[in-house]
Every structure is written in structure tokens, then in C-alpha cells.
Length: 143
Length: 143
Length: 143
Length: 143
Image (cartoon, rainbow over all chains, first blue to last red; front, side):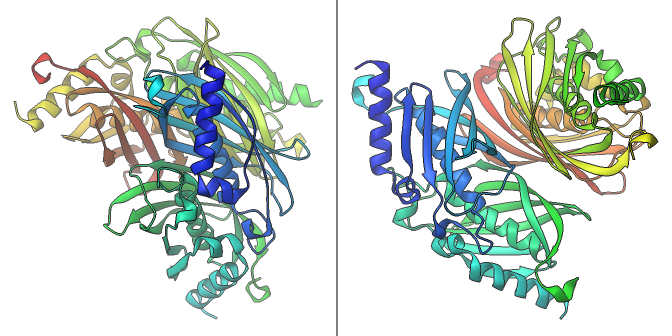
């Protein structure tokens, strides 16, 4: 199994088991080692009374992208610190894209920027996450 | 209407209209001007395949607490930047409490710490949020 | 005075009065409206006992870049929340470049990413800052 | 050597070698395992042209407090991600106190809140830092 196949297998397994990402309706657009691009469409049940998407929605999609990108090498990675700046309102019906950029990857620590854009290619939020890479593996054959 | 009544009226209205906070099953335990304490119980549909709560759940409860505390004065406030550190795993069935502390409140900007604890009073995450206070009001009589 | 001249005039004034940026030895490489690129060389008095640059040095250069970029339109802007991820050690003698990217600029709020790289074009830190734009101006003629 | 003696010995060594903390004029008010309280007085060379302390000064004092608290157990710890919210202006002549609170400490990761207050006990900034605990030790006898 090469690195690309491993990345896809890890994310397939993670998505299959991830009830919340499924509830969000996340679609995996692209996966590579150290990279993920996701899409969701904001539904009425994700918004507050102003018809504006709850801040937790953009965060959650970015957090899933962080999890997929940082786990794609086959080692289990867990988020330690995440931060997000909100730039533009998101409303019900908008489609969001969360795309990762790997800023650094070490033996123990990974840092990722995740850009969240809408269907008009406007940046609606920017997220940065730091993960800890454990010594557990998703599949035994990677040990 | 005194300040305490206004705070409760604002949060009642926000919760009534907030589909995502309702989906999360948020219960409002306490509201005062500049303060909110919320509770949720993590359900199976909020976890990933390891039975661990998605990072977006703790973030979302904290973000709702930030919204309620910062809007409780009657002026519409919107989150600009939030950050969260994760300290302890949360699993399905755990109950989370999000409690705000107002660090500063100015004419335009408010800063809040939100502590997220579980049913055993263990800190599971710490969140800090910065809001912008607009010149819109929740109710006309506050103008 | 056009926008480019105003940006340069603001930053010239800010640098002339900024004792700490002078102590840091900051050189302004490029200024445009909403943009700044700075350079410093790490000296022995900026490091800790491991000959590693104090975390406050990379932060301070990025914070000056944030200040210059966000004030370059002529309105006084002040930092509210900054965050920084450290990716690579910096040692005495290294040269650092801090370059801003404007993520959003509104009537009241600006958000900037600042990339900090070294002389080998390696990313050593990433900084994000949120500023509040006051209604004061650097020069009377901009009112 | 008990834990308290070790904490003091580590911080004494770190301060003795830390040229930038010395330049800042940091005084160590209290050290315990996992805890540090520091003091500095803002000097003219730390301010910008408005007589306001550069944001890098509050950050640097908090970052030193983070370093001392997280290294006080004898294992070398390095900062990975720090964030700071600014609440109140600091001017030349003000005295700042940076006091740590350990939010969590694991085998590999530590998370700290650092409160920065002035001589009037007003909170001027709040800082949170995440450190990675390496497998190096400050003194051989701790191995």
C-alpha cells in the first residue's frame, strides 16, 4: 500500500465511523498525505435565529479537515489547540470548502492552516490547528 | 425591565431561534448580565468512531455560551476570534458545562474565557473568545 | 497624497517614534496600503541560554508588521488578539522576515496572517492578528 | 533535591542564561513546580511613539513565565502555540505581573493560562500557551 492509498484508507475509515461529520454532511473532495479538502452545505438546522450559520459549523468542518490531513500518514494524531477567525457571515444554503495547508510536520507535532471559503470563493474563516502525533497506528501493517 | 430581566429575555429569544443550539440539546443553567452557564450531554451522533466527542461539540457549546454572555446586555455582539485548547477526552454520555468569565467589556470589544468541564468537575477544554459589539439592539426599548 | 504615500508616511512616523522596534533593529523592506514586510537579525541579547531566540522576538516582529499594515490606511488600529505557532528554532545571527497578508478589512475590524521566515526561506512561525480600527487618524488631512 | 528545590534550580539556571529576560528586567517573584510569578517594569525603550508598551513586551513576559513554569519539573519543555488577548493599555512606568495557572500537564503536553496584571491589579492581557515536553532534562540527576 503506497502513501496515497494509505491516506485514502485512513480517511475512509475515519469518515465511516464519524457520526458527527456524517450529520454535518461532509463530502471528502480530495485527500493526499498531509492534505484534505472537504465540502459541506449549511442546512437550516445549523443556523441560529438570524439565519446565520452557528460558529461551531465552520469550526467543525475545519476540525474534521485537520483530523483527516494529520491522520492521513497512518499515525493517530489528536488536536491540542485550534483557533479560528471569522471574516464573513455564512447563511443557510451556502456551501463551504475547508482546505488544509501543512505548515510543519515533525515526529511529534503537526501544524496546519485551514482556509474556509464559500461558493463564491470568498474567505469566510481562517483556522489554525496544532496536533500531537501519538504512537498508535490506524492499521497494523503500518507499524 | 432591569438588567437581569433583559439578559434573560435576550437569551430566551436567542435560544428559541437557534436551531443548532437546540440540536445540541443545550440547557441554559444560569444567565446574568455578561455571564452564561450552559449544559449539554454528549450523544452518539456527536462522536467520531473512537466514541470520542468531535472537537466541534465542545467548541460549539463554548461558542453558544460566548454568544449568550456577550449579547446579554441587549446589544448584538458577534464573535471575531475564538481559540480552544483540548485537555481531556470526552465520550458519549458525558455531560459538559460551559461557564463564561468576562475578562473585559468595552464600548466595542468584549473578551471572555469559557471553561468547559465534565460531570466529574474535570476541565476538558479552555476557550477564549473576542466579540465585536455592534450598534444594533435585540429589543427596540433598549435603544 | 495618494494611498501609497500615506502608507509610507504613517509607517515612517510610527517607526520614528517606536523605541522597541528600533531596539529590535527592524528594517522596513516594503510598505503598501494594508501590507508590510519587515526584516530583523537576531542578536545575542535576544536569545536565551540555549542560544535560541526568545519566543517574544518572533512575536514582536510579527506584531510590528501587524501594526504597520493595519495602520497604513491612515486610521489608528490596535491589536486585540494575536496567536502564534512556532515551527522551527531561531538562533543568534539568523535573519527573520515578517510579511503580512490581509485576510479581511472591514469598517471596524481587520484580520491579518503574518508569515515569519528565515534567511533560508524556512517558515519558523505563523502569526494571526485581529485589530480594531479606531476613529482616530494619524494625520489630520485624512479625516 | 526535592521538587521545590529542583524548580528553583531550573529557573535560576534559565534566568542566568536568558539574555532577553535580563534585558526585560524580569524579576522572579515566586516559583513552584508547575508555577511561576514574574514582575517587570515597563521602560521607555519598550514603548512605541504613543508611550504605549509594545505588544511584544506583555507577550514576552508571559512567554518567560510559561517557560519557567513548564520547565520547573526538570524536563525541557518548548512552546508550540501561544495566544494573547490585549485588554488595557500599558504605559512606560507601569509594573506588570505575569502569573501562571497550569490547566493540564501530561506526559508530552502542558497547557497554561498566564494572567498579566498591572500595579493596580487590573488585568491588561490574558495569554494561553501549549508546550511540548521533550525527553531532555535540565540536570543529569533527574534522568
